Length: 61
Length: 485
View 1 (cartoon, helix red, strand yellow):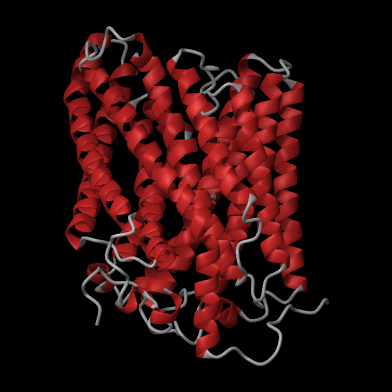
View 2: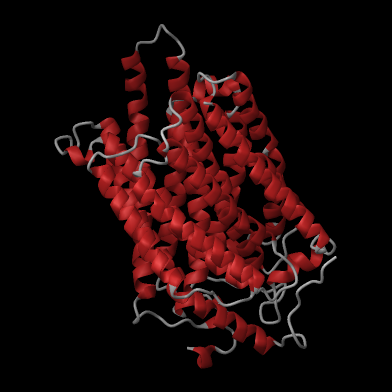
């Protein structure tokens, strides 16, 4: 029983610590300094903001 | 502060963007399509097992003389094929494609990765055989024998390594929110998996401790593996299809870290009322209530991104499935938080209510988002168009209405089943008789969803077949079309 709890709490601490480590890493890298750029990072010149990219077949404009 | 990684040279032109994207998609083709095609096979297999299990609950004599499909075996086959066959394989396919696109690098390890498709399939086939032969471990969600599970462990490590390789080579400045979720899946799940498989295998735990490990694992599969893959796809697809950046990027990051910090606490709410120290269960309940934070952030973001663009649901198959799934994520998460409370669990536990909740999560949320992802990704990999808008609509409506009927029927039946079972004056057979019409409704709902899955399988077969309709128009490649075919 003790071993199971040790393992479970141990893993939970690892999960939590990994999340905190990633958060610190992200802040230090400046990931949190420009949210707008982060949100727009999936768009490019060919698929810019404002352009829908999926339609039913046969309904292309 | 270390320097940010930037794309080398001058800013890329429109042409560069198109070429890069097509090269990335092409690099994913073999592996991702391998995972997707296998996933659809397991979806059909798992659905058949589900229907047989469902019919047996109201007509126990159905296939009753064949020991290989007795309820105890076929129900486990359903669970394991939809979790490790369908959900895992479609999730891994989407994960690899998303990570390649978001890192803007071609998929690495293109000899090892296709082999993992075969290894994963082999493990599921072997596991299903063992279950049908009656060799289940009896531990829910880990019914496959341990020697089968080691194959999954190997593939998970390859995926971890592949994700790290792509991330270290990335050509983008920002780590998009979907990537955080994908890293959650590939980093946390192997740790969780190895811990949950190894501990019982050593024989050092038994009884209540085993049950604790079991449910801690089973719920974390959803929260640290399945949910992150589903949300990663939704966070990419909804903005990408609507052409609108997500409403609040900082809320999305808050949601990710709240999920990361709270989710691994909550598995013990499955053992409310069980023979465990009360504080262990209380920790699970507190974690479950804390989940309101990430869930509300996701709900606000997905809804506000869609505001003013709901008309696109008429024109985009991807969006229709993905938004349905995203709405159900909010619903299932709110329901789950309340269900963890002792007062609610007192009625709902060990009833059909829990089964309805599980399907709202795994099907209405995750599976529907993954359908949406496949509608987006496959044309870009095969460069073929989906063959029939009508079949897509059949797929959507049968699945959406089917899971709706399933959820309503079993939630209603389960709640009253729980109330009656808590009343010592009600005979047990009366409770069984009460639930029967709702179980028939469940089989009807299952038949509707099966119809949708068959329609989807036909679409998949046709688009993978070389003679299908070539891709034209803006299902995406507006330029470079002729050159790259």
